[in-house]
Amino acid sequence: MKRIHLLLTTTALLLGFGSLGIALSDDDGDERGKGREERKERSLIQANIAPATDPAYLKECGSCHLSYPPGLLTEGAWRRIISPESLSAHYGDDASLPEQTRAAIESYLIANAADQSRRSRERAFAAFANPDEAGGDLPRITQAAYFIRKHDEIPPRLVADNPEVKSFSQCDRCHADANKGDFDEDRVNIPGYGPWEKD
Image 1 (cartoon, rainbow, N blue to C red):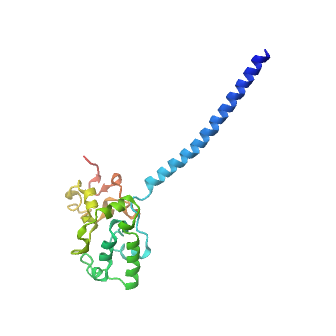
Image 2: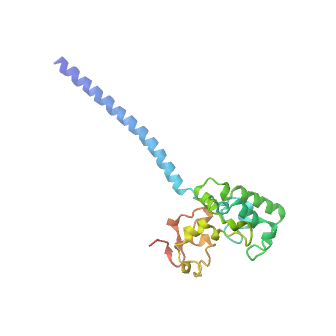
Image 3: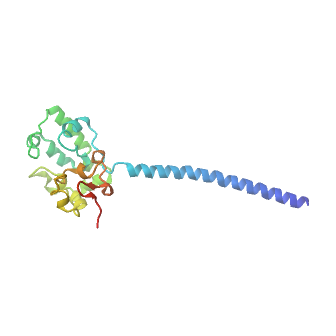
């Protein structure tokens, strides 16, 4: 009888310690898993392109159009666009700036250009940069090979022929959070058409 009592007590203790060990290890797993899930969730809401953040750039350029994220063009393209000569004939407008402001904006754009970035989508803009950026007309984001590839399925009637959009350069018309660097195709909403869905 003593043996059975000892065996039952030992079994109960082993089961108790085993259950405690499982409970504790499960709790640790939850914490680690929770951290992984939180990181995954943060990465989903993190901008896929770094948004423009420089106050001078946001004020001077953003007063006329979307302050395009610097990671959408290469250093060479930004240098051409922000040069004093180019600003005086900035896509048909005079966007001249005081030299100190222009130089500060240029430094910001160059430091954050596509070819300086570690973000994969921005690097794609650099990798597929137009080799003709160095001469001719001013560089256009809409002429970048990566941009064209990402927008090639969208019929012009939904953008260029759409009075609510007018041009592919009006990113923020269809990408509501473009100013936050969010260009996710799953959140595209074309004015007058609705959410973009591939057929």
